[in-house]
Amino acid sequence: MSTVEPLLELGEVQGLREPLQVIDHAGRQTGERYPDDLSASEHAAMLRAMIVTRRLDTEFVNLQRQGQLALFPSCQGQEAAQVGTTSALRSTDWLFPQYRELGAFVVREIPPEAIGLMWRGALHGGVDMVESCCAPMSIPIGTHALHAVGYAMGAQLDGDDTVGVAFIGDGAMSEGDVHEALNIAAVFNAPCIFVVQNNQWAISVPTNQQMRSRTIAQRASAYAMTGVRCDGNDVLASYLAMQDAIERARSGGGPTLIEAVTYRMNSHTTSDDASRYRDPDEVEHWSRLDPIDRYTKHLIARQLWSPDDQTLAERAGEEAAMRLRDSVFDAADPDPLTLFDNVLSRRSPELDRQRSLMAEELSHGK
Image 1 (tube, rainbow, N blue to C red):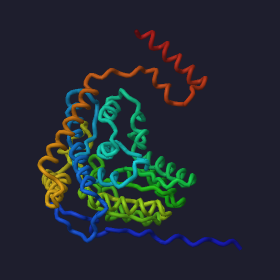
Image 2 (cartoon, rainbow, N blue to C red; image 1 turned 180 degrees about the vertical axis):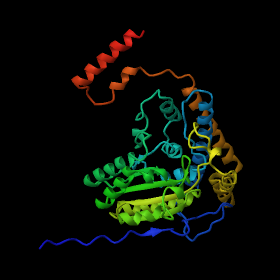
Image 3 (cartoon, one colour; image 1 turned 90 degrees about the vertical axis):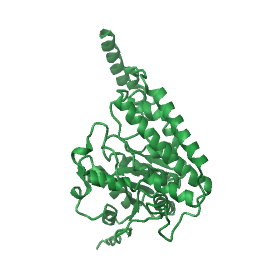
Image 4 (tube, one colour; image 1 turned 90 degrees about the horizontal axis):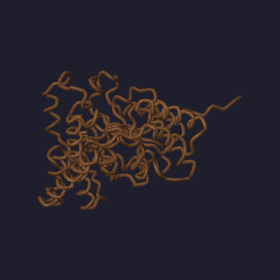
């Protein structure tokens, strides 16, 4: 008679009723927990990254409106969730972003021009990102969650204690790829962290029409993994939630699903008009919970942020925006034949044949 191993107990869910919060919208400490490991310079670096992210985000939208980009998905309002979680990681932990993770890119110091040229289509997605342990942006919804799990499993087999992090949105939680990624990560106890930025809207569909569960975090229980719900507009809560998940992953405790409760202040992309489906009162409510204002008030109260710091951060944002504009504006289109250069490390005979066919076709069009 075969022996069947008992099922794992359901995973722990933290913050089911009230999300983990460290500071409220007025910048006041609300909970007992506080990230005491952060130095004054690290606090300042996180706020500076949020300010630079906001300025770059604005410049990206401006460039799209001026016809320099076909599309851009704004992350305004989500800076704390991105900067807080990414800042808790080692620089060697791998990020697997979707398309709205500008704050994570800023923390990893990926050049603004590299990000801008990718959105213009003038640069392949892996350039200047893989050097920062960041996978190329994923436009298909949720597919990259599987890549994050695959990386984490590979690191585990190599005896490497780095972790894989998948940034996904609430809409991606309705995709089969994400279900498969969560299930595989749980079954193999992979050191993988899923950061779900619940910005309340999957394009025009609100979260309450995407699922019947009260929270996204509680869905972790079905996979017998830990689920954590944090205030995604609180950079310190986002930092702590990720810090806990990292410790769990590195110590063999398996994957974590983090739900960062935040809000997408702008439309889904520059091709969308959110005023057609969102109540302006809702937008006004969330605007009063702005993550940058909140953290600024907190650091000023702790004497960790001065007018000079604010000036330097704004200047850094302007410099980054100018680098972005100078690189993107009227940038040349890439040679179509480069399509074949990054498929394999050494082109196969079949790729050579296809490249020759395209080269011949392009020559006829001249």
